[in-house]
Image (cartoon, rainbow, N blue to C red; front, side, top):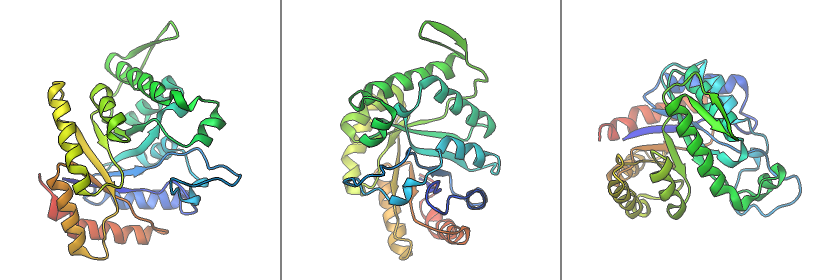
Length: 280
């Protein structure tokens, strides 16, 4: 199992220097992928924060712009988005952004993709939130076609799509009922958030069975969860439990304010957790 780590592209710590230094720290480590988040902004009026979103996310840098920047200061670590809200962006420019980052990073992009949920962001865009699933599927189909053929046809107009690097892996976010059909149709795996191993186990079994029935390669499962790094033994045990239920990459998500704090997190993962779960 591989280990990933979040890279905060939001809040007061998301400065050019912090992003560069933290990305460089991860690039020198055994961490497989660093992951950024996607939001447009938070509503200015009072609202019911039922999703537990950090209010620091009111100040957030665009994930595609951040990964373009980070690609220039790294050479090894993969660059992931967890997850890009597909209906927020027109499909063809989104595909071009992805191809650009994939080209500049020399094939290190991992695309987490999802339909989104925050109604205020859809309202601000003038996008019908009830159509978000259909818009997501249409955009993912275009991305597949563009990367496979080096050309697209949209609104009746054929266009070249070049350069055409290898398509990044696509990990679908969301609950199984909606995510699993999308994984089979458009994705390479599933990206659950916050679920414990015993909660994940039956879902992973179901996803693998669906992939087998569809004649697809076994879907990857990239889970996001905060490990208790203050208790190294407990962190290792939890990471091993994720590996045991079929997680292919575990993304440790943790708050930090400075590159020194980030370096301490990376050191603990490098020295204690990654050696304990490497391999299968």
